[in-house]
Image (cartoon, rainbow, N blue to C red):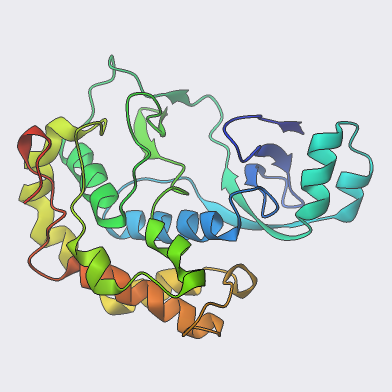
Amino acid sequence: MTPLREGGSLPGVIEADDLGTYVCKFRGAGQGLRVLVAEVVVAGVARLVDVPVPDLVTVDLAPEIGRYEADEEVQDLLNKSLGLNLGVDLLPGAFGYDPAYEPDGGLAGRILWLDALCANVDRSWRNPNLLVWRGALFAIDHGAALYFHHAWPGGGGSPERFAAQPFDVSEHIMRHYAAEAAAQDEGLAAKVTPDALQAVLAEVPAEWLEAVPGAESPEALRQRYVDHLLARLARPRAWLPVAEGRSA
């Protein structure tokens, strides 16, 4: 329907054959398939810990769409994106988060906890990645999370290393809710079980899971994500946010 021209990924608003309207994030964008994987995984974990996120679908892009696109940049992106792409349910009438909105403290703490667990560095005042829709707060755009997987083509990035990485809350939009995050920590961690993570990773299409050294199959790569997240959940949780932008 229209390209959004936001950031480097150039998403577009599409109408699918289920008559739904989605923000489509294209596999052919320069950020690569791992961004789509991060979107699905973090959204799945968000649902486990009661953080509202828009519904996600896979979008099979028809070749004809790119063939008749007048904009050469968009046409090139569409032609590179044949196959399964990511669709994020468009929330009609939603507006961006701003200081005038007073979030529920418990939810704000859960959003901060989620971002710390998944190492999401992209939720600041410059780019909140939060929407208010029908009075409810929704978290969106998690492609910058799970940064560890960008090291995998070289074989790097162990679960233990990820587990030990602190989380800098100094610019996080919900940094003032660190106490609420810490208070909910045990209950939230208990919801992110091995079985629950396996179910989350099962939602990632196999064709988005690019083979890396030591994990050549989709099943092995899914397990690698599970192992990294479980290692981060183990105590001591070095990433747990606390007041004044410090980590404990």
